Structure formats: C-alpha cells, structure tokens
Amino acid sequence: LIAVPGLVDMHVHFREPGQTYKEDIATGGQAAARGGFTTVCCMANTLPAIDSRELVELVASKAAAIELLVVGALSKGLNGKELADFAGMKQGGICALSDDGKTLMDRDLMKQAALQAKELGLFITDHCEPETEIVARDIELARETGCHFHLQHISLKESLELIKTAKAEGINITCETAPHYFTLTSEALKSQGANAKMNPPLKSEADRLAVIEAIQDGTIDVIATDHAPHSQEEKAQGVESAPFGVIGLETAFALSYTKLVMPGLISLQKLIELMSINPAKILNLHRDEGDFAIFDIGTAYKINSKEFASKSRNTPFEGMEVYGRTVMTVSKGRLIYNDRSFN
Ligand SMILES: [Zn+2]
Ligand SMILES: [Zn+2]
Image (cartoon, rainbow, N blue to C red):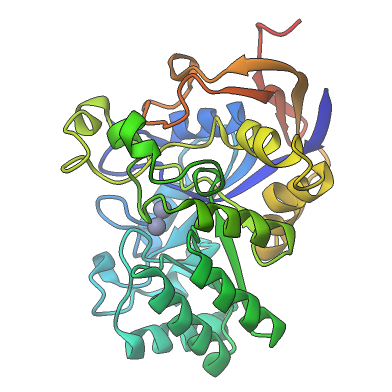
C-alpha cells in the first residue's frame, strides 16, 4: 500500500445544475473520493452556465464529500460575446475562469478577459479547439497580458512543442492532459465506440508518445480527468450522434500508475506531482495534512464500471487490468471513502 497526498483534479463536470440525470455534486463527489481525490474544480458548462456570483455560491453551497472548487464562465452563458462578471464571481469564491466545452474564439474579447483576470488575481483555464491554433493564440495572449493561462486536455504533438518553447521563454502558461491521451489512440473507437468519443478526440500513436514525453520532461504540469458523465441512453446513440466526453475520476490514478509508473516511464514521486502537488500549486491551495489517499499497488484488478459511484458508466477502460485500487480516502482527517472489500 502507498499513502499519497489527496489528489487534486483541476477539471471535472458534475452537471449540476441542469443535467443531474448524468451526475450531481453528491455523486460526483463520491466518485472523486473513490478515486483518491480530495479536491476538484467544477467547470462552468452547466445549465444554466455558472456565470454569476449567485450561481457560483449556489454550486459552492452544495454538500460534497470532497473540497469542491468552482470555475466561473468567461462569457455570459458561454455565448462567446460578452464577458461574465469576473469581480462578482471572484467574491463568490471561484478558483479560475473557463468557457470549457466551448472555445472563446474572439481574440479581442479573450484579451480583455486576460487583462481583467490578471487584475483580479485569477487565471484562465482554456479549452483549445482547434487545438494548436488556440494554444498558439493563448501563448501570445499570455505573453501580451502577463495573465496565467492553463491549457486544458492537451492531446497533440504540435501543441506540446509550442508549449515547451513558450515555457522556455518564461511565458506564464501551464497545461494538463488526461489519462485517455496517454493510454489510448483513435483505434479505441473501434472497440469502445461512443465511450471513446471525447473532445479533443483521441489521436495517433505518435501523439500518444508525445504526450508521454511531455509528461516526462515537465511540459505537461498536470494530469486532470475531464470527468464528463453522460447517460447510457445518450452514449447508445452511437459514435456519430452521442455527446462528447468520458468519465475518469474512478480510473485516473490506477491508469496513470499502471501505464506510467509501472513501466518506469516516470517515478511515483513524479506522478504525485502531476496529480496532486502541481495542481495544488496552480490553484494556490492550502494543503491539509489530513487530506490523503491510500492505494493498493500490489494487486491487479479489472476496471468494472458497475462498481462506480458516478451516476454514469461512459468509460473506455471497462475490463482493463490495472494496479492502484483506492483503499481509503481521507479529507481533512475525515474518512470519505473506504473500500470494504479490502482486507
Ligand atoms: Zn474541454
Ligand atoms: Zn471539460
């Protein structure tokens, strides 16, 4: 068994308010706890979008097993046209700004957003689509404004090359990838269908290897899940019409441990940096010594979505054999998850 500081997920979708048939804050929080996470950041693309102080406070007030941080929308209703009330949302306690799910395409508006965010001491966590073009734009905006940009779910070799160069120049950017980008390629669509459909989509083997290399050399700061629950009915519509997204909270640590640490690609210490220490630094979190998780790294098990605490089952990892099952998660000294089958 190993004990690690509580994992921090900078990127989840808990679907509340508006789409609680997919997930809600209580079940999302339980899924997080079951994955060894003690802090998560909820994205703003709910219905309605979290774009005002009132909505930030409403979401933040919901009870969750883990510490729930709220990301405020960049634009009102994620419309990409008019900026949301950053100052009000900051008073409501947001941790960052993002239109995740949609890319704010208007460069001038994004520049205004970056200037305001910097003024308020906030950072922007951006969904980059089309990926490399927006990564390049955001690097330029970070250079022009000094605002910190965190680039979400990076999946392409070309994007990683731009980020690596920008970091070497000292530009204020960080980035994340998700476990599916270093474990799967677009081949997975053949066997997993709509459960392997997400945004950005799975890429080539060369991209997968580039993501691993960027994890090793520090270009990638964070592994986040982009936990995006959808109902079985929605995913049953098939690859063409099903919505984008896969869940990840209950598989992220085991996949990362099995695919990165066990083959010796990175050390366990490096994995803890990617999943706990670096996101906590980016979020400027106060670390609580009572936040930790215990994982069983000595026993193989098969991923079984029927055991998930999440309301949804849209995982492309069903049946995969992994190591690193969560045995126990403790938040602020309180037991929030305990695997009773472990003895
Ligand atoms: Zn996104
Ligand atoms: Zn997302």
